[in-house]
Image 1 (cartoon, helix red, strand yellow):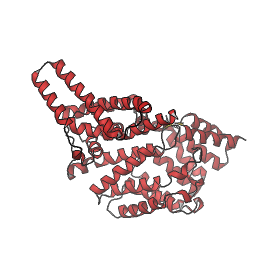
Image 2: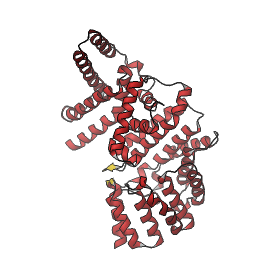
Image 3: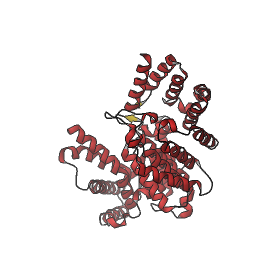
Image 4: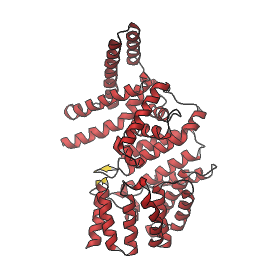
Amino acid sequence: MTSELEHRVERLVRDQAPHVLGAMVRRYRDFASCEDVVQEALIAAVSKWPREGIPENPRGWLVQVAKRRMADHLRSEAARRSRESSMAESTSRVAAASTAEESDMDPDDTLVLLFMCCHPALTPASAIALTLRAVGGLSTAEIAKSFLVPDSTIGQRISRAKQTIKTSGIAFQMPDADERADRLASVLHVLYLIFNEGYTTSSGDELHRADLSNEAIRLVREMHQLMPRDGDVAGLLALMLLTDARRLARTGPNGELIPLDEQDRARWDRRAIDEGVALASAALAMGAVGEYQLQAAIAAVHDEAPRAEDTDWPQILALYEMLMRMTDSPVVALNHAIATAMVHGPHAGLSLLEPLTRDERLAATHRLDAVRAHLLERAGDLSAAVTLYRKAASRTASVPERNYLSMKAARLAE
């Protein structure tokens, strides 16, 4: 029971972290210091809540603890500087923050924080890494897996982003329409990555982190309300809804992974699918077609098939070929190879995977080995498939994925 409570507490504090950080940055305007005190508040919660119980208002509890830590920080800073003006300013900031009304939290602090982290003063790579940390609550290691780069690279990007925010004096406020448009690509990419990490976690015992995927969907809905005629925003919301609609069917009773072609489609969320299809159709009619609209269209084709064998793979392949002209993403290339194999046979798909063996972005992941194993299995080369399934299993930190890949290898080796 204790472990279950501790697990619940850990999930709860991670879910609340971006909201608390947003509230603190709005009050104190010092991103780096706010992140430090919020981390202290989260550590305090993880320590106390399993013993004392989860408070009735977890977010309020965390904000109050963070504010006390910030007050201590400001007083200590003022004392070190030994300047009356600094002391007066610090005391004033503490007093002002302690009397702030909760009603001034509109608009959503998390959405404002999202745009702040994607400010044009930051490089795109640093902005995305910082936002995944601050808004998505991902660890440096989780972000590195999403970017397919070393942990140290992500750590450097986050540090540079914090320093840029500090020196540039970036305001914590909702940008106007023109500024939102300038930051839109980075914001949407961040939300896409947050959703992906929630839908298929890069590590751990569970396949999903619904807190992350649900928060990404919530934030994109907020974006859609701000920019209802933007096709990219509508496309991303459609993609998330159409993908998340399958979540309940992706795992079995023991949390095991169930692949798309074996899922019980009666468990798919038809309401989410209907909303996603409508949004995807509307997004395609809004002007220039982008990556999210195409990915949403692909998801819609999957979701509208009554059975796996009814899937319109030629249409999916055509959509992936359009997508390939827009992006050099190795993950898109992997999916394009799968679609090619479904239409033209496994050997055609395998030939498309050959250039990806030299793509350094895939070097540290299990994805290429898993796809090659799948296509080799379809091609009848079971021995090679077993070897690659085992190799892929050894390279993923996700327990459900590792178990699934190991099981595939064991069944083929019988």
